[in-house]
Image 1 (spheres, rainbow, N blue to C red):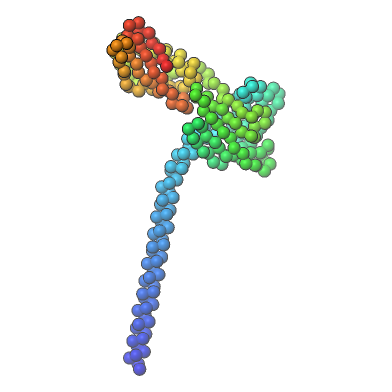
Image 2 (image 1 turned 90 degrees about the vertical axis):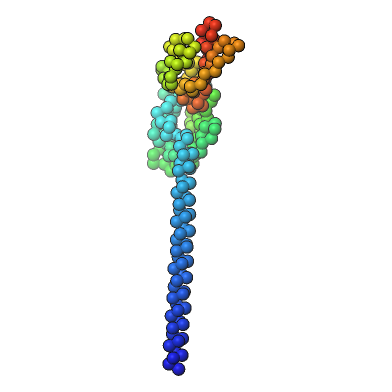
Length: 239
């Protein structure tokens, strides 16, 4: 009887150890699964952050805008839209929430109020990019106009990067003339561009006796400008 009791006790201990081992294994599997899921979430977050960084109100802080009818002006400052029409001034306070960018611009969910002490309500501002690189902002929280167009920047000398001297030497023209052509084209077609980068490729049309090459502007559209040099007359044009 005593031997039987000892045997039963031994079997009970073995069963208990097996149960504990199974529990530990299960905890280890669950913990590993949670770590794997957390790792996946962390690996996805940089991409989401990159998408949201493509366009936002923060990038437009300090910018000045004019309504389409020219009657009202607006400034985007940190946390507020300041609209003016003559002596009338309206201020809308905003707090950013989430930005969604696309090829045409971006939409940003914001919380707005008429004062710093009022409860904010949800709103959305939409900013679209035009072909010339200008921006148009529309928001149902604007008070003096439904939409505004960003003011053109003051004219400034276009910065040109790349070994443009090689292009000028090959085409037998003055490098400064290429810069003047790009400056005039950007001022007329892409006034928001501040720099032009030579793409480094040269195309020769032997039959037409002309050389062409491309430059990429730093405007919001990344406009590509083709410079054409007439081998007969030395005339330089851009398109």
